[in-house]
Image 1 (cartoon, rainbow, N blue to C red):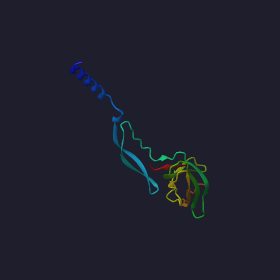
Image 2: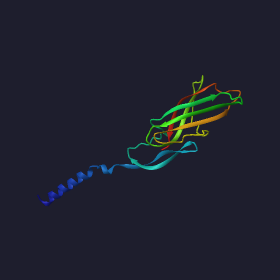
Image 3: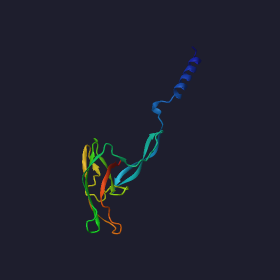
Image 4: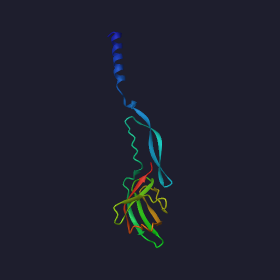
Length: 172
């Protein structure tokens, strides 16, 4: 083989090899990724610039529910009229984190009044004596709440209230 043939084969081989992509040259881009932190009994959104693969799609789903979360209503008392134009809501709900990691977040409690098909969902954290913002891994926390609410005497208060469900959303 002469030098021209060897050089031509070398050149063709180099072109073929360099035209193939390698796994080390994966495409990346920098995007604003939403995150959530717990601040003043509410979730606060903030963004972090992160390098991600080019096919990554940002979906802001908000705070995510805790996986494998369970709860147990230990005590739930609703007094429609305390005699002073207030209703009283008192409860203790055991929030269980069966995961091997600690979490920080908020419990959302959905309640329903008797004879009403609408539901109310809230955190109750602002006024809870034990809001359970943090739950250790393989641990529990008892969300403790006891508050009197004024009501409009023209409208009145609901006759009863019950817990429909409890969810725990985590900061990330």
